[in-house]
Length: 595
Image (cartoon, rainbow, N blue to C red; front, side):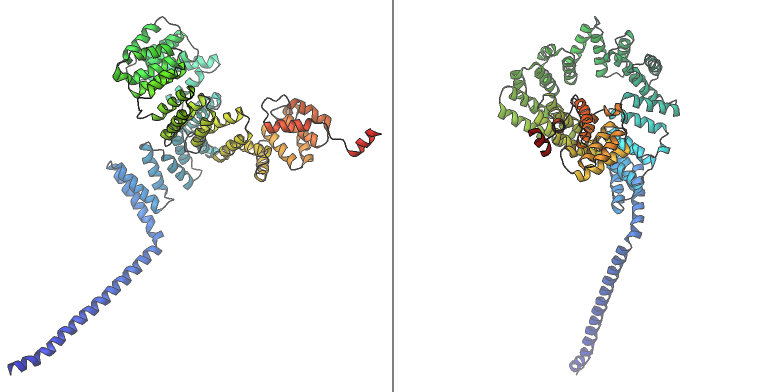
């Protein structure tokens, strides 16, 4: 009985247990499904409303970046600022903060973020001035000039603007008077700014105006008494000995400079140069002092060798270098300075012996370049080509080194190597204007119009608002019959901006002629004065217009003047020769001649 009773009772119990288990599993499946659906809907809602969430996250990232700056965690602040601009590529605060942080870290990437800020808030003087300041720091004079040019006219009457404009004018190689005018304008606005007083005095000291020179000296004498400005003021005064001013005042300034407690090695060389240029009897003794100072100091020794080489003392420099103790003589700085001296002396055997056994750490590109020179001068062309290839390879990732290598090739008249190196520099981020300027010199020297066109087009791309490269691009394209669909409107646009510019007028005149608009071209010529028609290459293009119009006598007068122009391109000489040919007689004229 008990067994039967237990059997009867265990069945319902097991059923209830199984049912409850199934019920729990069913509830668990339902809740799992609901959780997945809710998560999916939440994700979908968040994605659809990311534009609402991202601004909050962006502001939070900027706040955290600023807090990290206060804590001294600059790398962390940069990461959070990058997060902000990742969330919103047009984040003004994130971009500005990133630009400031990178600027403090002396990173060239600063320029990219300064440009981003200027794009997000266009025509804002503060952002454009910051961009110009950073571009000035990295000597990107094209970008600095563009940034200043974008500042609205009404916002340019500030001392900061004129200070930057002066610096950019000097960096771009403009006439010193341009920078001088900007510094003067800055001082009118902020007369107490002693740095600008110093900068203006530096320019005035080099002017041809005696009154300006006198005023500059008075300013510099006053500023040298200021502790913060004593060294720069003395350097400007002492530099007079390097620009032909050998007065006792310049030499005395050099003495004071070298004796200053904070003077650098270069300041002692300034005094040495002052003694030499003024033919002072103190020169020899001071040179021996410098030699004694440098004999155990490789950087100072290298500078002394370079100074002596630059000042006509190359052989004494090489002789002095032979006395250096071995640990100093084997230093990279000494080896490379001596390589420059031996190159000037054309001592190729010793140059090769000096460079072959060593390997430079920081300046391997220079060692290989000088080896290439030694090999080529000794007619070892295979070795020379290989060393030059290694020099380029060693400099490839450093724009400054590559530019120096290009300058070396240019100074050696290695035209093909210089051309290749300068084009590599021109395609990089810095020294573009220098590279294109050097390439222009190469192509002008060999009258290579296609090369000049390539340079002009590249310059026009990086300076789209500048008239000179735009005009060169149009003129050269027309001469070469290339891309006339772009060159013709470009010539017209340039002329509309500067109709009195004879170079621009010549290009526009030729563009009218190639379009067959001879009457319009004649009208343009008739509106020019005789003085204008004699400027630049206008005699050639005016003569071509008169030739096309059948006015042979008028054409010849201009074409004969064009024949005296010294810098005509090959294609222009061809146009001139063709225009000077006598006209081909017509059939009627030929028949009349036979009768």
